Length: 470
Image (tube, rainbow, N blue to C red; front, side):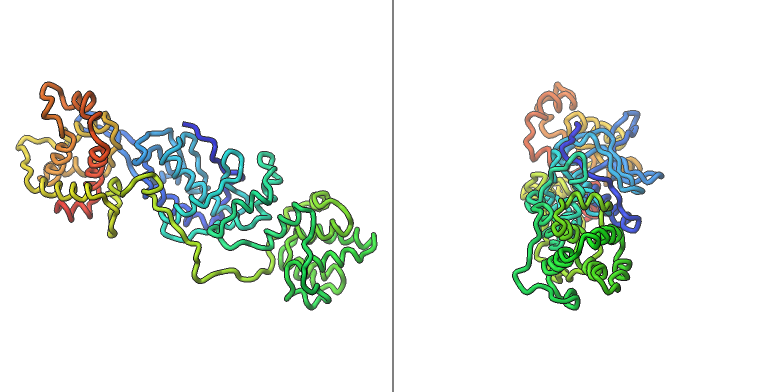
């Protein structure tokens, strides 16, 4: 199902030195959130569908098309580890789509330059996705693009698709959970959109020596006074100098600041003030429209300026959403394959089920003529026909390879008992007929969860060994 409401505005451009980290997080999100790749297997002459973890192929491309929690097979989607690009047209609106949006937020986090998640052509508030990622990855994630407001404002203003993003939109979107707000960038957007500089209430800068210790408002006001004091020829020369500054890095601007004239002062101010605010000060001094001057000078402008350290040792803004709650589960009964060294939130019914399975397992007798492969193929067909989630390929492969092992046979019989529950009332019907015509409609929600949970538990070798002893 095509879902075009969520899209990325801009181009994914993850620096090479950050790709390994981002790719690792993308694969972890896919794993923990149940994204898988389906494939066909032939078991006892019967073709069945199984799933495997989403992993890169020889070309570094991850192929996936299934969510074990949504239980819905979708068109092939891809994620390229070489470019960090995602292609997912058939997203739907449930668990699969949720993970796609989480990956797009990671693309925004790691992209160097303009790349933002939008919803219905408007900037999307991604705070919820951020909290969810922090819950899944168990780490603090900041989103630099969302607290550099001038960069995001300029990006959308220059775009053909989204030119109407306003300062109010950015302010409504911002959350301290994204990271510490860049005040210089906020002032740039506010002043440019209002076409008016904010002048300081306190004492203005009286000499060049005070620039380093002055406030941000005082620095732009000082630039404005310098521009206002120039004659027409000086203003024209200054405009060309500003064009050079806009496209100069920090060291080049620092070198120009050694000049002992007005240009040197403006170059020194450029070490602290974003170009948008310098250009606005100039535009107001010469009574021109900001965008007219900005566009005539060309270039995006530098962003490397001296700023106060806003880092915090104790981050009060770290929050996390728990994945199973977000996908509207009351517990982690369906998550038994992820049970590894910590306590899952299991329902009382599931705890009782696990205890019951353990007791039943110990008492199971295996028929001498049992064929594990035939037994397994029959159960996989039944699971598919009654719309349970596809089984993990590793589970299927292991139980075929260990088909002569008594414990593996007992585990299959235990799973068969869950599927057969209620079959005794319909001896005239085949198992498949009873499943499809009667039992599936009578199963309550927990019965369905329990069947998937047992397969999930049998896939988890560590917990399986603790409970069943193999």
